[in-house]
Amino acid sequence: METVSRFESRRAEQLVETTAPPQTDAARMLAVTASYLLSEDGRKASLLSGGNGRALQELVIQVPANRLHLVAVDAQGRARLKLRPRFELNGDQRVVRIDAPPTYDTPPSIEDLFREAGRNHQLEHAFHAEHSAARHVEREADRQRRGEVAEAFLKEPQQRPLRRPTPNPQRCHLDTKYGRLVFDVRSDEGDARLVPPEAYKRFRADLRARSEAKQRETAAQIASHEEKKRAIADWIAEFGTPQQQARHAAGVLPMQEVLEAMADQAFAAGDSFERYPFDGAARLQQRLRQLPQHAQVAVNPTDLKIFGTDAVTATEAQWMLVQRLQAAFADATVTLRQHRIAWKGDSEAPTLTMYGVIVTLKVGPFDLRREYAAPEE
Image (cartoon, rainbow, N blue to C red; front, side):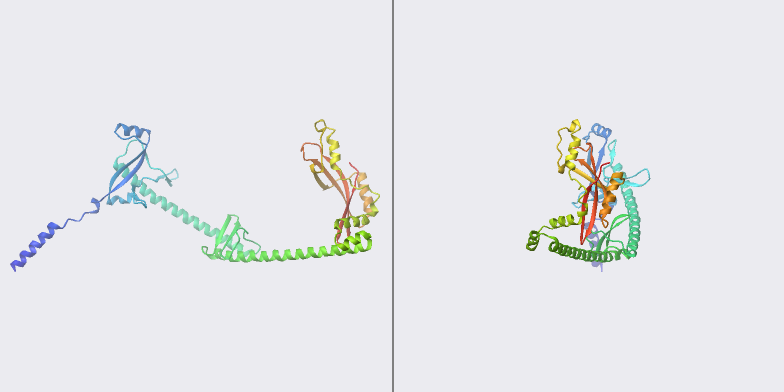
């Protein structure tokens, strides 16, 4: 029994001597880089105290494990004291983020840097809390806006999505009073989730409607052209010259020639009236050459800008002409027109105003027009 007792005593002593005492967290240290700025006064103080006097100061300090909350470690394993970015309270007592290290007028002590890092750490939490609350409020407001827009869109069948980008059953864009909003079935909820499929349905319906309307318009144009071809064929067979009939049979008779001939026949009752002269270039040139600065000007038809409108007033002579033409063409539409002719070469140059009376007759599928000269004011 004594032998066993002595053995246990020696074993206990050996364990006490060979086992190192556990190291506490407070005793463990981490080398951390602290970066800060010195003002001009601070740089002077640094030089006076034997420092390098640089604006950006970096030094390595030992931070105990119980203060590691004041340290940030990047993806490359570099440990830095939390001095940048720094957080401060503005005039509205809101925390703002400043992407710059603190600036000192005198070189700070290690404890000064720890206090700055601690203050930064606290304000950073407040900053993120404020922004988190603001984002929550913004998300809630956005959800309400989207719900309001979605409800109105679903209730009003006349509303349509934007055509670009092209809507699809999962995603669409709407132009709203809040600006352009994107709706997506994968991220939206409630009524907002129903918008993309409904928008796509309306978009496809509009495409079909436009296609059908275009087909009807094309069919109407083809039918109108065929009717005009038949009318021309009938007119040529009855009134055309043998030479015109031969060219028509060969398919080489210009339609414009036939229309001119039809107009000559339809407006035969107006042969005693003077036709409107399309000589605005010559007349404007004659007027401009009366001015010294334009004495040698040459005006071509391509140099003209012509503004034609229905006349709002009529002289006695002009109104008399309108009545005479209306009597000559009882079934026609007779309109007094005013043509203001300007020269492109000089916007300040005088303009020329000419008057004409346009007579429009309906002959079969054609609207034939002829313009007659009207007296000037």
